[in-house]
Structure formats: C-alpha cells, structure tokens
Length: 502
Image (cartoon, rainbow, N blue to C red; front, side):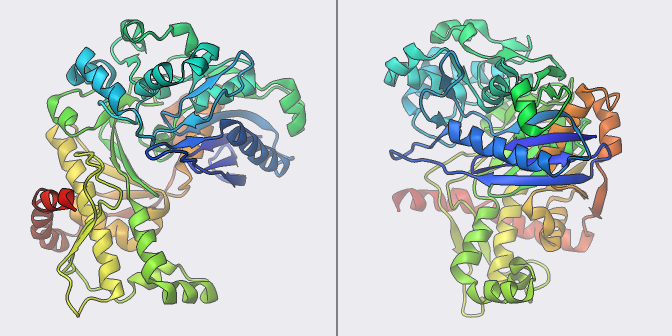
C-alpha cells in the first residue's frame, strides 16, 4: 500500500509514491513555463499545469501496481490566483506569486487598513506576492473576468475541485492569502467585505488541523487503475509541507530549503506578530501541523546565483562533470581556500529578499584581485548566500523566535561544503534528512495521517523522517567568519545608494 504526495511548484511538478516507512517507491515529474506577457507580469496556464500534474500522477501510480494507492495530498506554490467558472475551468491564466503588477492595489490597502493592522490580523506584509491585491487587480482591471468567475482559487483548491468535486483549501494555504484571520482561524469577513470580495467565491476551508477532504472521483481512480476508494487529504503550502517532511514539528526547529530560492521556515507555538518581524518583512502563517505556526524568510536568488556562476564561467568543470559523472559544483569548488575567502559577494541578483525586499538592489562582488580564481569566487558566492541567511536568522532571534536546529533540504543540501558553511557562519547545528524531497513527503505524511495509517503527525514523522547527516559548527571557523559577517552587514547600506543610481 502506498501514499502519494503531489508537489505543484512554480516551474514544475512532482508526484512521488511512498511506502509507510517514508521510502520512495516511484516518482515522476513534469516541467511547465511561466508566462510574462507584460513587464512585471508572471502568469501560468493552470489547465496545462493540471494536465501535466495528472500525467505525472498516472505515471507514478502505474509503476506501483503492487502497492495500491490509499491516500494522497498536495503541496502547492502559494499565492497563485485562478478565476474559474462553475465547472472549475480556469477563465484566464493564473497570476503567480512572483507577479508584481499590484503596486496600486497595495497602495490602496495601505491607505484603507494600514500595513500594521494587516500584518497583525493576517500575518502577511504589504507585498505584491499576496492573493488579496491580486484579487483587487482583477476586480479593477478585468471586470468581465471578475463578473464571470464563479470562484477564485489557488492551486490546492483548484486541484481538489478536479480531484474530489469540491474546492477546499487548507488553513495553511488560506493563511498565506492576506484574507485569513490568524486569531479566529477563518476568513476575515470584515476585510473581505471592505474589499468587495464575497466569501462564497472563495474555497471552503478544510478541516482545521488537517484531515480527509474527499475521495478521488471514480473516473479518475479508474484512469489510475485503482479499484477502491482513494482518500484525498488536506495539504498545504509547499514550504510548510517541506517543513513537515523534514521533521519540523515542534517549536525551535527550522527548515532551510535551498533551491532556486532559499527559504527558512521556523516553527512557533503561537504567532509572533511584533514590530521586529513586521519591519523585517517576515510573514507568519499556519503550519500544516496542528497548533503550530511558521515564520518565513526568503532569499529570491538562493541557489540560482551559484547556477548563474556555473553556467557563465565554469564550462570546463561542467564538461568534466559530464564526462566523469561527477557533480559540477564539487569540481567548481575543488581547490577553494580553507576558511573565509578574501572576497565578499552581495547576492542580490534579483533584488533582495527579506528583510528589505528591495527590488532596486543588485548583486556585487568586492575584493577582486588578479589572484582570484574560479574556486575562490565560487566559495565566495556560497559565503555571501550564507551571510544573507544569517541576517534573517538573527532577525528571527531578535523577534523572540528561538532556533535550536536547522533541517536542510533542497539541492543545496547535497553540498557538504555549503552545509558546513551554514553551520559555521550561523552557529546552528544542521541535520539533513534521508529523503530530501521533503515537500512531497510532507504531503504524503498528511495523507497517511488523515487515512489513519499514523496516529498523528508526530508519530508519522518518527516513522518516516530519518537523518542522513548531522553537522555541528566548528568554533575556530565560526570565530573567523564572525569578523567577515560584521563586514557583510555593511554591504547593503553602503552600496544601495550607488546601486539605485545605476
């Protein structure tokens, strides 16, 4: 018997079937594009995403015929709004979280409610990423779509409408829309009313704390070749599911997910909504784990900076990797100096993430001499990204959020050098789970718990999430990096006036 986690990301999806012990049976993935019909727009064909995701599910389940599918849940990208008709068909492309067209709508929200009130009510900062300003944009700029829309869904409820016949959204994902009241655990009806958004045009909230939201439609089950009922459980935001799938199920534990972007999720017993976090643009929302909340930091560039360096400057290492089967990143970093490099990299290649969220900031490399080589510069990129990570971890601590251990997932978790840098620079122990596809595993854990296979999420994690590596900070190296970190803290405020002029 198997459990399926389906992850709907920004540029691709992945379906993974797991055994009850968390080991992977089979997986399949598909890629899709992000559309930019106008500057600052980021859209996606939601119907194509559905079809490709369902193809991945069918391929995965077809390869696990001896392990019949029992239950499934979704891990999804956040803040992608999809207007649909009465049949659940998309009326226009989804407007993605990375879309930045809603500047005017955010200005209106600031004037009408005030950024502090919105943060303390919803945990979300004023930002173009949010669902609420996107809905206001649709109402103001595309009135015909607004009139025709039966509902406005995100990817979780859009998929669940197809899978079960009813659009249902998890409390986790709903709490990222800026329309959810963290204190009452429901839609903020007064905010909706002030914005002219009818509550019935949003999805129904799923069971609080997770659980079964329906069963897979019979014709879909027949397509999969599954004879019995397949339970469909409430899932959540992809980063929250990844936090669960990496074992972040109690306060003080945190996940660092390093892929295209780098995200930190810290578990809290109660939502911390103070001025420190608000000024740092750190969002707060419901975890998929009952009675826990998450604080989230974001570095837009993340591993994308290292990939840029690889693709632009490391052709020999990439060629050698293809011929030998080695990791190109290992070859890039071979020969890098021990301890801090003499270079300093500001990794704002697509603007800064938290705490400043400054789209006018740019990347910078300081300290170059003729002695600089590829391996030194590659390591300096890792140092800059890790200094940026520590800036956010320090702000979380300043805001009263304790962090005693990081769980590392994503592509960055494969680099032993980068993991040790994170431990040394941040002064926090790291664990690397055996299964680094943490978002899919988290969704599968939610499905298995809803189906009664595990008595609870804590028990489920104990049975499915195991450590592969444990990295401790090295005191001497940490001390050496402390001086460099204090210098790094001066980079952004020193360079930003010049960068804005550029």
